[in-house]
Image 1 (cartoon, one colour):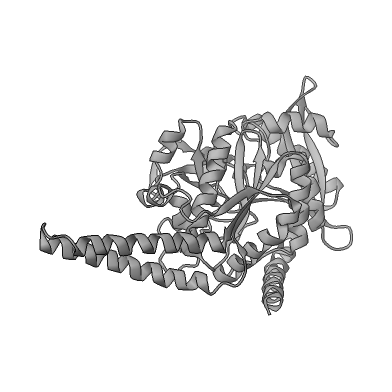
Image 2 (tube, helix red, strand yellow; image 1 turned 180 degrees about the horizontal axis):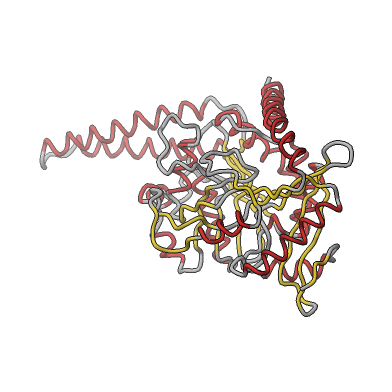
Length: 430
């Protein structure tokens, strides 16, 4: 086996995109995206008989003086059951890190810890404790089993298997989700796949979601570059849902007119069960009250059109990820996010993708209602995917002294950066 560096784009992509463990964050082009966050990509791997058998996108981040660290997002692309290969690759990466003055290498492999049901109970199935033990034996330090969004990447997610008839995929969604989707696009919302010109609308949904859920949001330029680079290589789509306010008003008025007519008909009936008739009238009146309440919100809107939901997806190999997205607070009762995700799932299935990753959720399988992630978690859970827990982050330490110092400074710096982003968002809102 031979350790190789500076693998060219064509050879690297041919291997990674077709590999079982291929991930968009290990693609050649993700390295280009991360240049915008001041990372330098290194494309390295292992060859056997002049053929690649393992690769890693090493993202180098300069620290101070000549020191740096490497981050391998979602781990190596290789057969992790081949412990000899893992040991050889690790040895060569340590040598490479020393040559480049890196104090440590961080990985967060796309490897399930074990198989879970939707409520977080461990089931028989895939289980990777032996791999975790091997990583520890090779010197990797496990960073713990956190349950919230404190790692570089989410440690929990929902993944939907698309390798089935769409009718079965739909049937496995939660009853509440199917009930909403069965109404089709009842408010005549406009859903389309946009382009770079729609990033501004996308960013509106990102900012509002970040403020509402107390999350950090990147500057708009990051999302512009993210989308532009990946879309150039047919790796990304931008889905947008907008509401034409006149169309929505017409739907409300039509439904209110129907209810009024139904009530009149019931009142004019000379025969039938009186109690049953009164109960039905009361049911209609309750529906009318709710519709009028929602309709009042729509009538207050002055714009002809507003954006409701938007998502940037990433496509790579046979998988799709819903990476960045959000919903505006206004008119959330129109359930634009259900229409959006349904369309993304259906498109992915029709285009032959085998899996869709909803990119992050809580490690608490049943979060309380006061948890900011409660709504997002339940929404994703109801799409019918597998609740997935990854094995977590590991650090391979090269320079122990500098590594310990760095781990004191970084949490403070991250908190400062997060607070700065939130202040900038609030300032822009004003």
